[in-house]
Image (tube, rainbow, N blue to C red; front, side):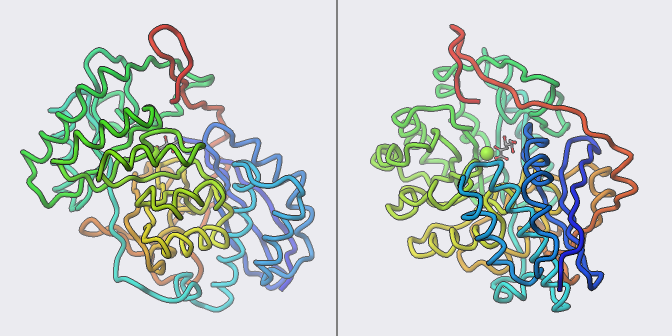
Length: 403
Ligand SMILES: O=C(O)C(=O)C[C@H](O)[C@H](O)CO
Ligand SMILES: [Mg+2]
């Protein structure tokens, strides 16, 4: 089955999303997500100039060989742009293979390991009360797990908090990066009160998660982890930047709060020590940014040896194509932990019709052959690309910090 066409579709139905479509001589096609938030057109250029011309005429069934060709063959390895481009090709080819087999993708991966996939939603509030109301709304919707983020008194803008209550949180909200100001001391003194309030109001059964978004030093992360142990978090995410994997040893020495890392990783080498030394509990690396199913499956299998579970990134900047493929992966992967879920705007769901469904705090990927997500290209064309950047963070004295 030969690849006869491969093209990139950029659309902005409320946010920029990049999709790769690969068409074969048998009329089957597959799609992959190629969205790298705030750097979308870098991936488009990489695909259009360097990857797609080399795909034409190749056998669409040779997924592994094409993966190696794009990874080893490029000489320049790894990096988010490269690995997002490879992921788009890989997921599109798995979509084609599953369609050719007339099976939902999870069947090709090894079949069902569970009946449904638990997801966590996002509760955000300007203050603790506002966040509690949002938790209540999620509980009513059926969520069993909720990520909680709230504003901190004295900090004008805090990561994860929507501009107005009830609105979606969208960080890529301006043409050029907005400048935020961060204060670690104020955050560390305040945020444990949020978890205490959530436990007080919702009891012990609700799974609570929280994203620090890389802002603490290792010893500060250890302090926070220790302080929140009484509230039994499902996980504390990205508590410090993880380029130096060894720094997580220090955090582990101080706390038993489970740790999740990895939404910015793009290769198994980014998390090898974290996993092998059991310095984390959940790996968040997802298909679109880490080479697709072919590579993330290697990470997940390696993680399973060390009782590290998956907890894939699923923010709205990952398109429904990524979400659909991820849900098939989650349905199969033996060491599944949880899946992030931020609902897309209706306009996005219309551009990407999909088979996955939410019910009672869980998703099912559907039984449609392939990954079950399609793109309405005519509709997609009605939403032209609009540059949008993620913010940057500075300390009060102006020092550039981690956003
Ligand atoms: O969903 C999360 O946990 C995030 O941290 C979201 C990221 O900020 C977002 O995907 C960046 O593009
Ligand atoms: Mg995160």
